[in-house]
Length: 92
Length: 92
Image 1 (tube, rainbow over the protein chains, first blue to last red):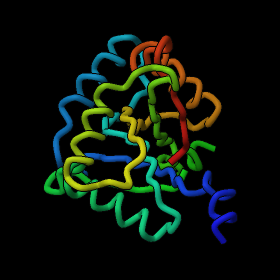
Image 2: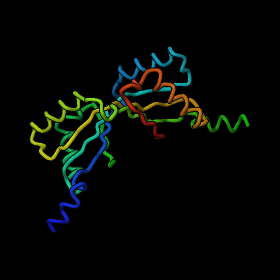
Image 3: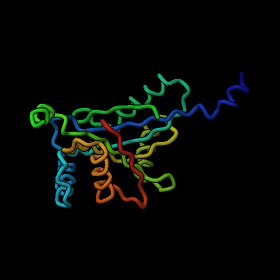
């Protein structure tokens, strides 16, 4: 059993991505600036651009449910402002 | 033909997401700060966290190949610093 754990030690890490976006009705001034700049550079078919944050998180955990729980906690404790932002977790 | 174009007018918008991440060997001080803060909050099974940028871009284009080209141009002109960053485009 111990041996198996050791040989599986690489599998103890799980990697997730988290994307944090502003809620639909929240103004995104940073995205607006990027939009205007790109239009100024001649990108006329640009319709809309919104900027968010992106995290790649590795956790030392074997159980996917537990890992997702941990990542949820991280988001709620620090990474995401739940009043104005939404987040999405995906397995990498 | 014209009629069909009009009835498909909603399909003229294509939406993509772009994630921009620092290249593997580039130091990520911002991610390090987040990592230390999370560990200070008791997240001991956190192994590694890296921060990137995220964009949601809508373009007025029907052709997916052209749309992807446009988005590539945007990335290279403004959104991504190709010396230290990688980017990935996905259809939403």
